[in-house]
Length: 89
Image (cartoon, rainbow, N blue to C red; front, side, top):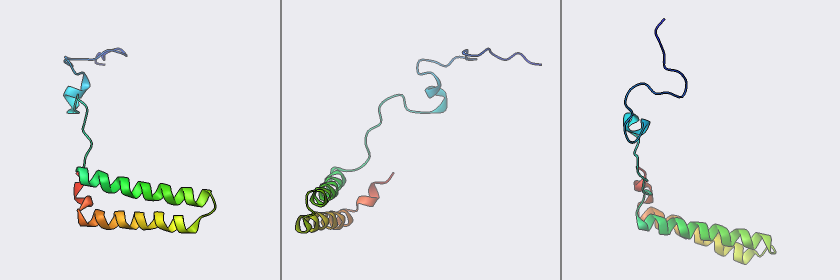
């Protein structure tokens, strides 16, 4: 039987970045994907959900709920207009 390295030991030179250098994983911090317009659209949709959710909890206040729902729909329309789905890498 061939000799195998004991546990907690690595065979060969793994270099300064360890196994990342061998597997091709980046050693630095990856940036977030997407354009600023996509982040704005996402923020608009999230704000709409928050407004609608708060409206349901405090009443329910249906007028405020539908305003929140309208903001979500508006965010979706803006997202389609700026091609938000093209940001998927």
